[in-house]
Image (cartoon, protein in one colour):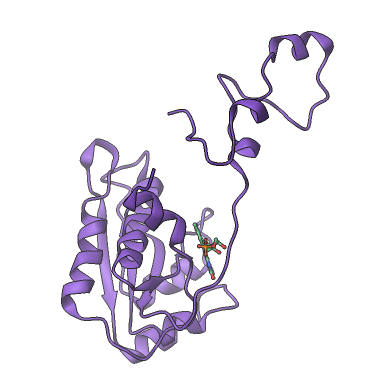
Length: 206
Ligand SMILES: Cc1cc2nc3c(=O)[nH]c(=O)nc-3n(C[C@H](O)[C@H](O)[C@H](O)COP(=O)(O)O)c2cc1C
């Protein structure tokens, strides 16, 4: 079975080097639309997307992200800051922003563009965190949070990444602790080893 969405998901890679070619508004809007249509808790849509193209701001932001590939941000023609307001969704604002981020990276890839999810959110909300510095730079109000930065542009090259196999990460009916030595009783309960019922090409249960 060939499924276009699944192929896009599988072929998307994080891009850390970009060509000096601008992204036109039509493509940029399509990426932003993907963020707009992401799911969110109670459809609260607690987000705002900041599109940054100013060279100075990109250079400053590059110096603030805790990543070895910070040049990714300044070299991309544009980056998108994904902000969320926890007052609009106090329970799942991180997931909401993450869903929007992932939607945008996937549509960007499907349009021949490259992105790299740069994690900006700081769980502890520390004073000297990258998130606080970036919020100040992008003039994001105190009560909002910054989930991610997404550099967007034409890829210079694509990397190669692998994933764990399905049979290593999918269990049938209940969680199986593979690190744990099973007792004889547990071995009986676990009649069918998941390795036998799932091959790397199987679809996980939903
Ligand atoms: C929450 C999150 C935060 C990430 N933060 C960074 C980051 O700060 N810098 C970076 O270079 N890549 C970052 N990445 C990208 C991952 O390193 C990348 O997705 C992973 O290595 C798998 O590679 P792939 O995206 O090419 O499949 C982040 C990804 C996620 C989901």
